[in-house]
Structures are given as C-alpha cells and as structure tokens.
Picture 1 (tube, helix red, strand yellow):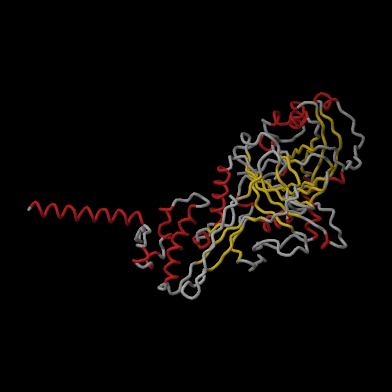
Picture 2: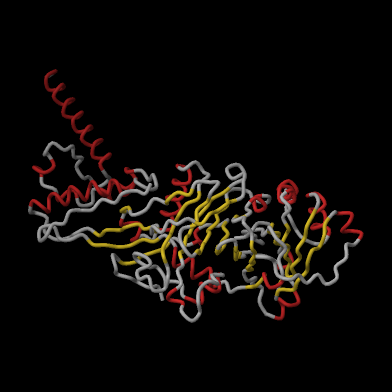
Length: 473
C-alpha cells in the first residue's frame, strides 16, 4: 500500500560518547514521529534560506510541491542538497538520555541533586519567452518563470484567484488536495508567488534512484515565516514539524505563537533505558507538554552556540557537531572559508505539532539576541549497590524510594501503581526504625504496595472474625 507521509503541498517537511557530565544512552530523533516534516531555516538580515526535506513515499509521478514564496525566485536561488545534512542535524540536536551512577553512600554519601523543570533583490529570471496562453488567461494564472533543477521541474506562478490556480494545477497534472482552494486564497491576496515542483522522471531514471533529494530556496524579504497552512489542506490529524535554524547572533523564536522550553533535566526511570523505551517515553512526554501548553505552542528542543571554536556544544553530545561544510550547505554564507573558526553561528531546534484548529496562521519568526544554551536532556541514575547499613545508607534508600516515585510520574503522567515493583525495589533494605521516623511507609510486597494494603486489610478482618466467633462460643 502506498504511503505518503507528507503530501508536499506544504512547505515541506560512530555515535560519539562524551563523558563531560555523563554518558549518552539514547536520542529522540525525528523518526519517532510518523506525520512529520523537517526544514532548515537560515536567517541573516533580510536574507532567508529554506531547505525542505522530502519524506515522500510512493510513485514519484505523484509527487507535487507547492510553496508560497514572497518574491520571484531566480534559477540560482534554487538548488538540490544532500539529505545527509538533515540526518546529521537531527542526530546532533535531538533530545537525549544520559546515564549516571550513584555513589556508595556508606563510603561517601553525596546529596542527591534535584533538577528543576524549565517547565536582496531576486536573481535574473529565465523566462524562456513565456507568453500567457489562452488557458493561462482563462485560469488567471501566470507562469513567471520555468527551470530545470536536476531531477525537478520547477515553475514560479502568480495567480489572481484561488479556484483558477487550483484548477490550473489539477489540469496540468499536479495532484493536490480537494481543500486546497480555501488555503490558497490568503497567499494570493498577499501577492505571494508559488514555487511549484514536479519530478522529471527521465532525469530521475538516469540517476537510477527513486529517492527525491531535499530542495533549497533562497530569497530576500522582510518576512521571516514558514507557510504551514497549505500542508493542513490534506491532513487527517496533527502533524509534527522539526525546524533547524541558524543565525549569526542568537535563538530563533516564533512571534505569533508562544515559544516554550521543553521540560528538561529530570531524572527518569532506569527501566526506560533497560527496556529500550526512550522513544515511547519521549513521545508521551511531548504529548503531555503539548496538551499542557494549550496545543498551540512551539517547543524549544535545543539551542547552542555552535561556532567551531566555542568549545563544548552539548552535554553530552549524541552525534558529531556540524562543521564548516554543513553550515555552508545549509545556507550560512557569512562563514569565511578562510577563517571558519572565527564565524559566529547559533543553532536553534524547534518542534511544533500543528493542526487546522489550533494553528490558524502561518509561523512567523524573529532572530533574538538570546544566547542561553538549552537542550532536551533526561537522566537515568543507576542506584548504588553496596552496604546500606550505615545511617547514610538508610537515608539513601529512603531518598531512592521517593526519587523513583517522582521519576515515574513527573513528565509523562505514567501512574505509580503500574510501576510499584520499580519504586519499592530496594525498600525492604530500610530498617524498621527508619521507616517509623514519623514518615508513612508502605511495606514492600511482591505485587506492590496496593496488594500489601489489601493483604493487611484481609488479615485484620480474619483476626477480628476469629475473635468474635471465639466470644460467641
């Protein structure tokens, strides 16, 4: 069965262990999300470079991309890039799991640290002497330019009204959603052009590959935005988009929706690592944060100064950092090839889950002077295993039980009873006097504390019944 994970009517869309503060264990990359797209944004003054990753699957004849753009693009403003650029940026900036080990408390007890929740003018145009045909006049659509860009046939269109543009696209073999007309009209009203793409099957066949490489466009405009509404015309539900943004001086943030930090720097249950559940955990964490923030926020997943000579760029790193070649390929043309180490560059990763109901507007952005570093980072701490008979050891076991209770519920909403055996795994090592120091304690039972409470209740009932029966005789 054919799968089209993104109908591109929209704008899209060796693992390096580093022991600086822990050991990298796993990452939550873009592959976790099914209906997802990825885009690279580079902004320098009024200049934007946008690179769109295609995860189209199916017959390449069915591929169609329609992207609103604010200016008329020249042939030199459009290029094809290697998809490995997205793979590298995703791997490097993805939310990560890191591993630590508790110190032996009866040798040297260390206080367990609590982590807080941070709950230009266009290039010359090759018009190829395009004259408006009768059909174009009938549709009120104008072909402004036409280019061959490797395996892609590219048109730049302008239109007077949305129904004409929709009918022109359909009649010229572009497969677009039935609901496209209503979302095309606002772009036409704003005088935007349309970057329209199909695949040249002859060129693609010579490449001996069905793989469609990412497309990159470049233009000057005071508008710093991503048009996401076209992508909603064919959507059956929520869609995820990962945005990798590069600037000279600081973070990129959304201006018409809130940009919020993803919950980070929290302890998470050890079984997430042991059972390979970090992907499941992160999807649940993101879904909970998405609901908590009102289903209409843009989430910050990574922000860091990645200037080559800056030093540490993550804690820990889950992949090699971008280098000069990757920055240039993404469109950061301010980097001096003779002195790349002296060029400032800041990397922002944002994650947005959007729908027609919650995101009625396209995403607008701004470059900020904010240079604060941030990363999605989740901590697995392995328990100490030595002698626990000393006072520090007893305090450690009690604190471990409390810590594990918080771990299983703090970020995902996973309920405690399901994980009772994990929470109370070491609780039977706590001495009775420590349990009874004014702190309620539920004893450990093989099936968890709830089973223990039921068992105590049943036992008390049996004793009471036996005494009544003895009195009666």
